Amino acid sequence: MTNGFLAPDGALRCAWAGAVPEFLAYHDEEWGYPVGDDRRLFEKICLESFQSGLSWRTILAKRENFRAAFDHFDWERIAEYDEGDVDRLLQDAGIIRHRGKIEAVINNARRAVEMVEQEGSLAAFFWRYEPGPDEQVPPQTVSITPQSTALSKELKKRGWKFVGPTTVFAFMQAMGLVNDHAEDCVCRRKAAAARAAFRSPAGR
Image (cartoon, rainbow, N blue to C red; front, side, top):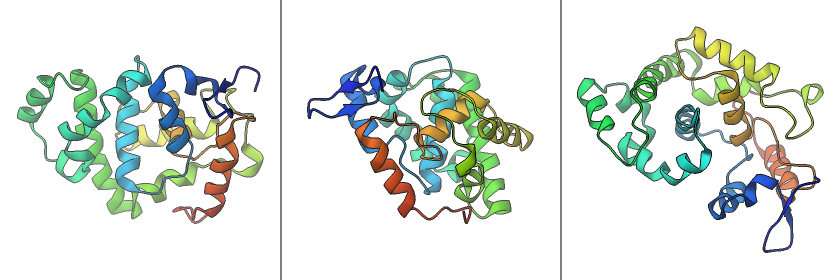
């Protein structure tokens, strides 16, 4: 890692972890570690869709507001939202007031209900797209992969919205489907160890 961030503890991190103070804890404690919890997976793909065209700092700062506004991303409850809920959310200054993205979350919640009925869980579906050992790419060198493209295509086929391949790859990075910590980042080995101990919901 040529442009890493030397954190206060003296260990190197991914360069982006030092961009703003609030990124370090997110980088160290969440980003890149495997997640099999459906609620967290649904929340993250929704937040990534809100990030489209914006910075992650903006979304991270508002994450608790998003959770409160969207019933902590309980997709079964969100699937029941109506136009009154859209109006309520458009008036909520604590989130990103973008009608298309708000409506996409509601739409995607309905698609999530369908997916759980068809696949058993969201995790079982998403983890099918984890790259195999021979499909890995050097960390932090791409923003789209064949797997993120394939996952994006399948989600769109199933009616999901705001799930382009770049958005999907950011989701895969964050949820540990790929370990994109830089080679010299102290968290890369931690993420790899977490993946080794993690039982893939897709049975891999």
